Length: 124
Image (cartoon, rainbow, N blue to C red):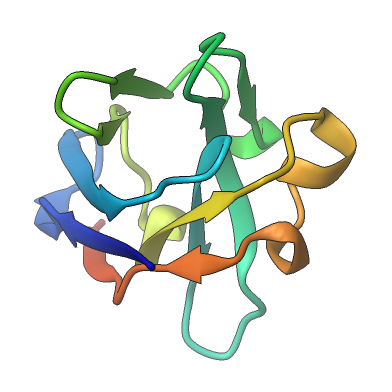
């Protein structure tokens, strides 16, 4: 069984930064990902990283602003979010997947375990 716990969300003004953490316990799978869901919208992929190689993938709207990293010794994945925009407002979830290739790790259906989510609100 895998447990994922997110932290670090909050309220920030546009242009500001937030740092989200995801602490994993149990048998984590190959890839860790971040997804977000805004009210009235579908869940969307944000970023992912593989534990072993550190391969990363980002959705285009966050490229150059968000950085995903992992600390294998602490079983923790961090999403550093800079230059935040109001459209980044959402509940952010971390998740873990047994897949590792780009074609799969950007899709929520290939993630087996999910955290409860943390709210990120960006004011204009």
